[in-house]
Structure formats: C-alpha cells, structure tokens
Image (cartoon, rainbow, N blue to C red; front, side):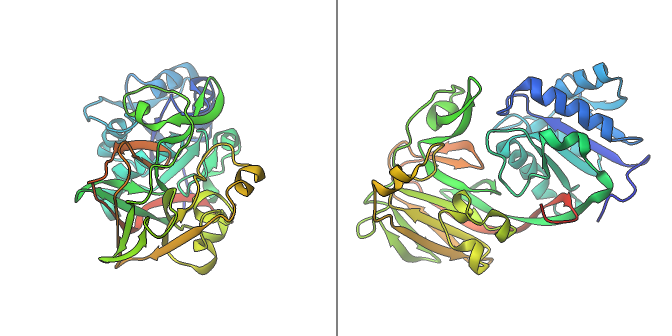
Amino acid sequence: MTLRELRGGIRVGVVAHPGAGSGSTVIERVLEELFSTLGEVTVVIVSGGMEAAVAAHSGVFVEQVCRTSEGGGLGIAGPACDVVRRGVDVMVAVGGDGTLASVANTLAPLGAHAPPLVGIGTGSANVGPLVTMLGRDVAGLDWHGLTETSVDGVRYTVDEVELGIGFNDIVFSNTFFGTLDGVRVDLDARAMLCGRRVASTPVSVCGADVRVYKNGTLVLDGRNKEIAQVVVCPVNEATRFAGTAASGLLSWGPYVGCPAVLAASSTVLIRTQLTLDDLTAVEPLQLHHVAFGRLDEITVLGLAEGAILVCDGTPMVELGPTQQVGLTLAPGAVQVMRKDCCR
C-alpha cells in the first residue's frame, strides 16, 4: 500500500502523548505542523485532549469521538482504540518509543484489518522500527512518498499470561531512559510503575540464579556465565540499527539475519551514559547471544526481586525470582508507513 493519492476520502486518526520526552509545548507544535500537511482528509481524534485543543486553535476541522476505552501503560491505548474503532485508513501516533509501541499494540490484534501506523518520534530516544520520522521533520512530511512495510515484534508473557509485544527491545532492569527537567537520564523503573519520575543508577537485576531456556533446553545459566543484564530484541531492518543499543552494540543479530535475539552481558550496558572508561573498567566484557525465530520459545527465570520488565522504554511489570517470562517472535505484527528510500 502507498499513500500516493492522499486527499478527500482518506480518514487519518491522530493520537498524541503530551508527556513524551520533548514535552507538551514541542508536541503541540508538532501537531500544528502535522495538521497543516494533511490537506483534504478527514482527521479523527478523541475529544477533550491536546489534539482537539490544537485543532481548534489551528482552525482545522476534525471528527471527534468520545473517550470510551480504558488504556493501560501510558494511557494512550484507550484513545487509540476509540479512534481506530471509528474507522481510519491510517493511524498517526505522536510521542516516544513507548507511545508508538502502545498504539502498535492496539493495532496488532486487528491483523489484516488494522490501519498502518505513522509514528512521529518526540521522545527521549526514538530509535525503534515504529518511527516514521522525528517530530522536527514533520513540516516537510511528504505523504505521497510513504510506503507500507511490515514490522516484527517480540511477544512477551509473564507466568503464561500474555502482556504485549515489544518492537524495539525488552530489557530486564531497574532503570529506563527518560527525561527529567529537560535532561535525558536513567529513571527508576519501579517508581515509574507508581507514577513517579525519579532519577536512579542502573544496577544488575540478574545474577547467579538467572536461567535462559530455548525450546525447553537450558542455554544460559548465571551459575557458570557472568550475566548482569538481559535484553531481547526483534531485528527489524537489520542494517539500519547495526551498532546501536540492543540490536547492534549487544548482538550480532543485525549482521547474520536472525529475526530476533536475546543478548546477555556481563555488565549493565543499557544506560544513558556509557563511556570507554565504563567498558574498560569491566574488561573482559562478555556477551552471550541466543537467536530465535518463528518456531522458537525463549524462557527467562530467576531474576532478582524487584526486577522490572521494560518494554520499548516503558516499565510494564515488576518481576521476581519465581516468575517466568516467555518470549516468542510476532512476525509482521504491524504495518508501518515509511519513506520509499531507506533513511
């Protein structure tokens, strides 16, 4: 699918998360620029939110729907469900990686009936495969040059209860990337589950009791491998992320073509500040990799008390030593609109 003829008759849903890293002022400006690029289309939003206020101020006609759905996580899932339920051809989400993942998780269950996602990144990181463009580039958005592409994810369960899909990475940690007083810092993941933004220091939530199984076979054991952090990542557009974070720094996944990888490191590498001195202080750095695909199931057990499952930069659930995390590939979980050429 392409949007070569974006004009009257096309219905575009728009949701935004005002709490994303760049702040509400930046997101308001992004929405203003977004609305100015849409032309003669029907814009569908949830009434009463930032989207409605910006539309009214900008003089943009929109179709408003009442908020009826409850949303978990960032609270953006509910509005996204309401907009999609009204019927849209394209879904636009404005926010950070967590915001885009939350909207993608509302689209994934719809399968082939789901509209494609246009992800506009305004968060603290914005490195995931759901990002169509960054907020600063919206003024130059060429809708005619977008093409639909399929994006894989990793489905995760806790004690066999399905909780969601990760599209960038799933990290077992005590912290996550966030913005505090305009500065990108490591935030306390447990505090965020209670709604509090507090800076913290990354420490290991793994150790000797951590065990990783692939299809029932033990492949990593903290008793004979030094494991300080475990990260799981679907490898979308492998070369695009080579050398970055979980899909590059921590694994060979981008270079050999495996669809998903679990990486275990002997020190905590997912942090806002990582210098050469940090790495040389823990040499020799050990990395262990487990590749998996469509028919594989990964199981992680034995995490420390208070470990947090952080999915796409958002703390999702607190874990403990007895809880079992299951991980499987979710191939083609959503469709995302991107530029025709590689970014």
